[in-house]
Length: 455
Image (tube, rainbow, N blue to C red; front, side, top):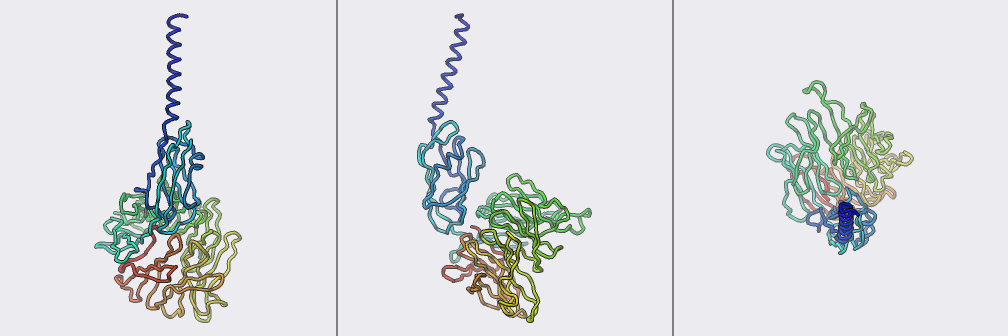
């Protein structure tokens, strides 16, 4: 063998041996797992949303076989790439419950690397806070409050008083809110639950973007957009529903038909349906997000109803005429066959009562409604009703107050609501929380409006 051939062969052999050694050593390098969010990884939302990072690329199906929770919790995985995954519970978990999350040891790497040590975290389902809008010197800002007595308000947004409206994310990690811009129109912004990382999410320029609604799948927002006309100082166009991808920050109309109007979108719990107020057609338009199919529900009230926990029914109110005058009744639309039935009120049930503004429990068939005994008196009661048996529980029966802006915690154990005096004084508005287990209510703060839960 020539000397040069021998040298080339030696180089090839050494290179191959080095590659084998690198592979063998690489396979022995353990894969480390860190809880990337939340930080610290000890308090999580009712949906247990946790983001994990792996030190090396892993095989998704192998990682999922190593996963354990105690007590057992049915969850779902969202893979961002081969080194990052988000796990969350399929059903809301009760506040203050402790859960152990862990990955056992085993081979998971793309080259056979292993998780050599058990990665374990003990987390507590955090107690939700309440977000409200509150007057500041030159407008309104977002503040959050705890449920403990005397909880001080924490300012969440900092916009120089330009907050218009808002919605909290389903996992409680962030808040999207609409903000008046320098043109006098409205952009969309986002901020973390603790008030950090506030940034503009969507620059709407001379358009007005409002009523943001988070999809349960988190990365989509539906919102109302009123476009500017040819004259920037002229009236805006009719409201239309747009969809914003929060990850890519790309936005587009919900409908390809540019003549379709809509306002105030609301998602079904499974993220498959949207209910939208369509004033031009006199009712609620129900849209299948996957297929684009739609159908109308006649209503004159301007609200978009509430979805049952299984996304099978939509409860909504409509105005009818009777001997006692005009009053509201509650109807139920079966999404599977589009049938409609009157559930509360009407000629048979409810007498002269006006029953409206349904808010569905996230865990069972019960619905919170307002009940007005005499349509000549503006005061209303707040009731929790079982539509199937027409049985109910009084939450608030002070007829000198008007309840509004009520919503459930994800576990269905607490209801937050706003009480306004008939006088209409801003400082007299009260924010209350009702505990379903005890049946008792407590006041959280006064002088605030539009409460929502921050899970």
